[in-house]
Image (cartoon, rainbow, N blue to C red; front, side):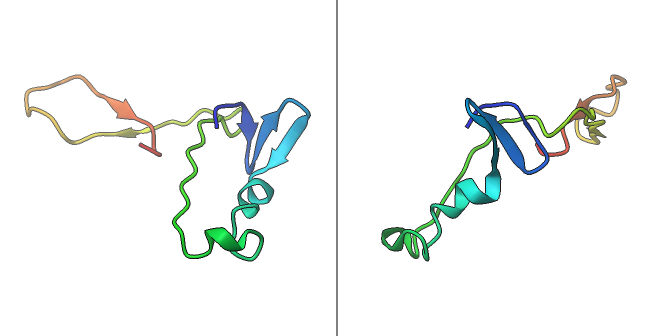
Length: 74
């Protein structure tokens, strides 16, 4: 899924959709043919208006003075 969102929801064409409701359709008690099968959801969506400050990495060359930040979820 690729959309905008907020904490726990994504925005669809008809309004916000709760992620738990969306993924619930794939649970074994709702769809018996998927029982015991792995499920993978790839969701690219923002989770609100706050910026992710990221973290500083400690990998790279010792003489590398540039400070790099990567997203916390990376």
